[in-house]
Image (cartoon, rainbow, N blue to C red; front, side):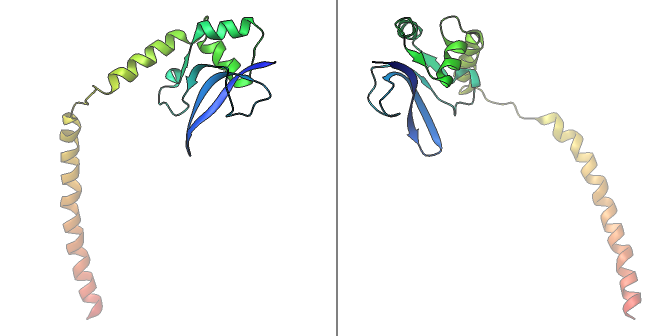
Length: 141
């Protein structure tokens, strides 16, 4: 039996979610799995927090001859045991955890600068309206 490590599509319409699974290569995409090895959520706002893998199990399956699909091969290279993006993944997970507690401060200095500019054009507009009104009256007479 030839084993592949590939993605099994879950989720709903316009909201995909994938499981990284070890499967027989002849089984359908969403068919029976041998073992689930992790998840991949492409809709996560933090790019580096999208993947979670069971590194020990992925290494085991690779050691016994399982072949990863193209996309899973990239994910293993980035987020596997000796991945290139492991530090960035930890930082992204921290940011996601703090995002719920974050409250932005009110922008007070920006309002003070905009108020004088808003008053000057307002003063010019009534004068322009008064000038245009007599011209229309003279034209109608």
